[in-house]
Length: 115
Image 1 (cartoon, rainbow, N blue to C red):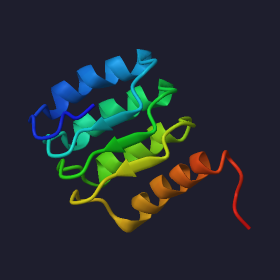
Image 2 (cartoon, helix red, strand yellow; image 1 turned 90 degrees about the vertical axis):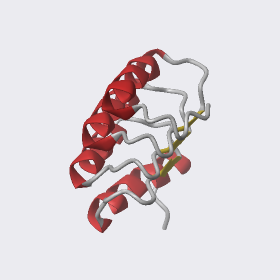
Image 3 (cartoon, helix red, strand yellow; image 1 turned 45 degrees about the horizontal axis):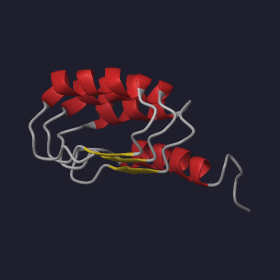
Image 4 (cartoon, rainbow, N blue to C red; image 1 turned 60 degrees about the vertical axis):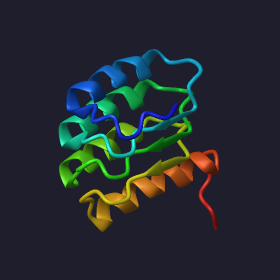
């Protein structure tokens, strides 16, 4: 589902997160350029913890900083289906970006580490 450039903000992200918890069909969600911010990222992280269908999430250009990225990293830890999260042009540091990338790699390889 492409919802890019809709300025949904943190409140809209909260509503989407509520839907993600109960979603049984959506596999791709494009939220590029929606001014989600750290608060919206926290809401999405909460929804992603319980989602079992989403494989691709685009959060590029959303004014997400280190705090929001850490919330996403925490929310992705129990998630086993997301294999791609796009976070370009936010304010995310290398350390948190690496943590999120590690979770994506784990999900792509079915939990097996590469040798």
